[in-house]
Image (tube, rainbow, N blue to C red; front, side, top):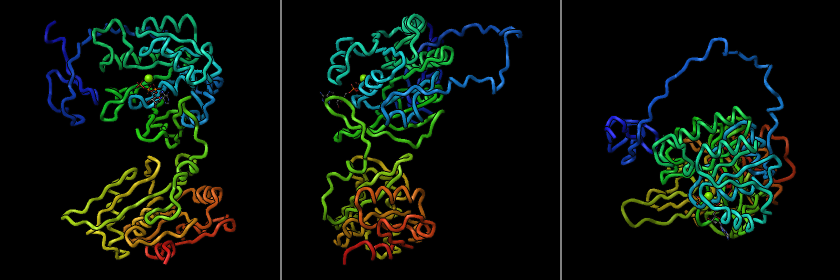
Length: 450
Ligand SMILES: Nc1ncnc2c1ncn2[C@@H]1O[C@H](COP(=O)(O)OP(=O)(O)OP(=O)(O)O)[C@@H](O)[C@H]1O
Ligand SMILES: [Mg+2]
């Protein structure tokens, strides 16, 4: 094979080069270039002018709008109400996180015709899993195949409404010389599946592995081709799994689905607050309960901080489940505005339950947890703390305050600290003691026991 038939592709972002490079100029990762064969370009034949038609928007098929339910509520919500007919959904996740389990459970529940294409496991292996998940084996049609042409023929023959591909890395298009799992194969197979989905109005669910960098193997490029990208994630040491939408052409990307992995498969977690607060020690310094909004749902969470004197030059700051830079800002605010001498203290912060929070409404709870651990004072029992903290130490209002308060009421909390500006517009005032606060210093005097 002549040298001119070879190109080098970055396995991380898809950047192409005619020579091997140590570092990708696009995504700046090292050692990501892989050799791939250049496929001969097919001659492009122009469509006859008479074959081209324009469509009017109001001629769209509204039956098309009907979602295909997976009857797994957490999954359907993340999808935006179910699978959109004719769409392509990519589910990525670390090895062993439970992707095959999730799609198999969904396949068993979907009432429409489903074909589960497995390139990774034999029928026996899938059967064993199905038994473990209490799925009766005649509920799902399985095809163990990796050749895309055969998969297409099977789709032509059986005309399924949903096709599950587990996983895209094992599927290959025989006309291409590249081995399965290479960028070219993954990209070509996905775009063919996309065309098929649109043409046949068949929904395709693709499972994809994640590389160690946390990017769905190779195909950052895939994210642009498909309609929806879901990420299935979880901490190894916890049995919780979170399904998140990174991109969704037919729904919100704020929504998350929470599952718990058991021997008999994934169980939906419908009341996440109870679970995340379940293992909480009642009286402990540095522990504060806050309410976060994940998608449309409020979740009560425990923020834990441990502040210890540092005997070496550089005090340590470690944050699990929270942005490290945001923690540094909050520490600076506490130091300057509330006069806590934190520059000589190690600060360890943890959001219990292995969940990650990104919204600023938990700032105030984090400040209270740090102050509580630093001063060895308990936080008053039965209290929830909510608020964003500004650089001036002021407490700023947050969205969805009523939903957060209702969740605290539901779980039997006695009092809730909220931003003063939110208090002014509040309708529910009687069901729980509400303490409006204006700044961090005032909050600490209200929250910490004397
Ligand atoms: N007997 C069992 N009891 C409890 N949990 C189990 C059992 N068997 C498997 N599991 C769980 O299922 C997970 C594997 O699920 P699954 O095969 O669906 O993952 P996957 O994401 O498809 O993995 P891969 O990347 O290898 O395809 C295991 O990591 C484990 O957590
Ligand atoms: Mg699998």
